[in-house]
Image 1: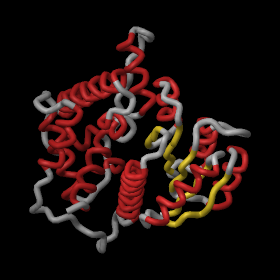
Image 2 (image 1 turned 180 degrees about the vertical axis):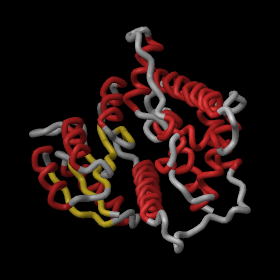
Image 3 (image 1 turned 90 degrees about the horizontal axis):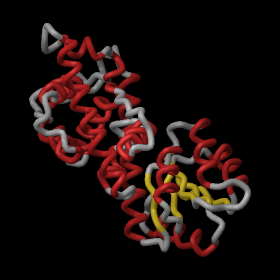
Image 4 (image 1 turned 135 degrees about the vertical axis):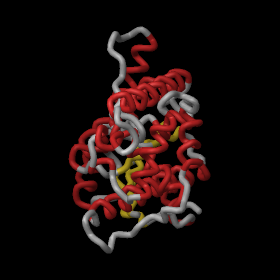
Length: 281
């Protein structure tokens, strides 16, 4: 795991370097002290994770993340800043930041966040490798005897959708994908529903309503606190953050348009968290 730092304060750079090296969190590639130099180094070094400040000379952190994400969508960013404005934190997440850490720096928090982002990075790469093996008889098979219901329910409980009409439908589809070692991209939602019912449209509607309820719950958490753990974890992994932000604006009365749920992303996220939970055992 390759890590790069972009920060205009040498003392902060030294602290981050010490945390990364002393706690063996990854390979430290170096640092840049302004945004303009930072984007050049990113293009040259192609790190896995970038820790960066929000306010910097040359190019601010938000602009840098947006530009870098367009070039390297799989690159992960952790923003570290003393700015506590909910509006700015929201923009950071909207631009593609994985986590937002407030200064002054807490070493334990930095370590935990880097480890969590590293887990997501590894899981993303594992899923990509599995996708590459489609059609290959040597592809690793998941034990069909395992039951993933508890992992799925754990995520559902966190986003407040247990007991919704589409709960069992989601569980059935996620279990199918896990046991067949398949990715949701291989199917249409209708195809997946056809495995369980003769009325796939009705099943899809139940799933969409349930997933939408989860988005509303997450949006309300974000309105109360942008740093809420459930909001930070799931707003960009089960949903599209831009759509969650639209839902937040709708709830606040700032917009007439509600956020939309991308069902494939939602289901893919559920699969991701089940695989992650299995990997932690």
